[in-house]
Length: 314
Image 1: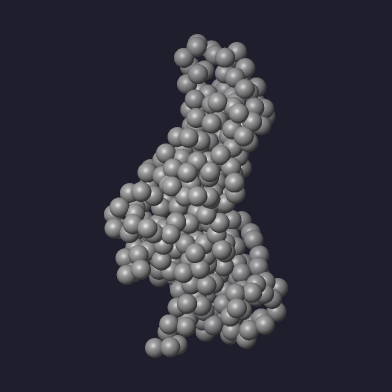
Image 2: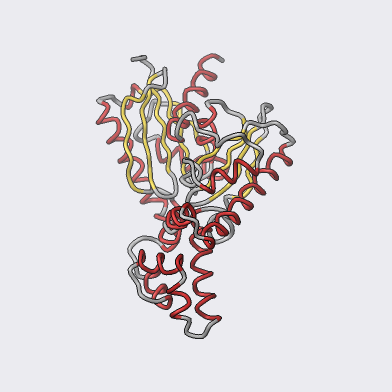
């Protein structure tokens, strides 16, 4: 094992991941726990949760805080541009001697996927965004406005489409019980939700323990599975999502003036082979779906290592 140790902290929309790696990017220890997005759980609660997870990961690796050379931090809802001070203040008490590198969750995903600090990343998970850094260091983000204002093509967007279609069908045919519950896709969704008719969607959505956005986003997996089985409604929804994601990516490349940029995929919708990821890759002119070299949490550790080397070499 290399004596140098680096930590990656990846706070996504649905989970928090911590990893400790050596100088050869070999994982010493890692953990996964619940989400830490400050916009969802509050800044104070997010800080406590992140600090506790860091301490748990170091305890599991049997390493002290003083042995961590650098830590990379990327938290959804707390971009480096607007929340760097908060990110540093969150981690510094538990890693007082480490070089702390604040980044967006998109940047650590890009670095992890390509194992370098430039390229283009298309992310589609709970939310969606396109992010790029040119070789000259210019960076740009398209999308990532959150589920209330945007996130087209995301899991939330897909789940919302099927719910909107269901209630629209229900309203257009009067009570609509027979039409909306006999449609193959709608019937499957209702069964999965454990409800008998569309009107009960309101109770399901607002009386559950998890946030409504999370509950809606979880429906995307149903759509992916039914599309694989040939359900035409599910296929149409996924095609709409692909169009939205490709539009963001092309706009980013155009605005960055970065033709020929290497494109990486990230997020739960694009991390495996399915009708959506294959369609997006095809529409972008890629021969196959890009496969990330490392997950975002390792990207955060790699970013920490790159910055530590740059600083120590200066």
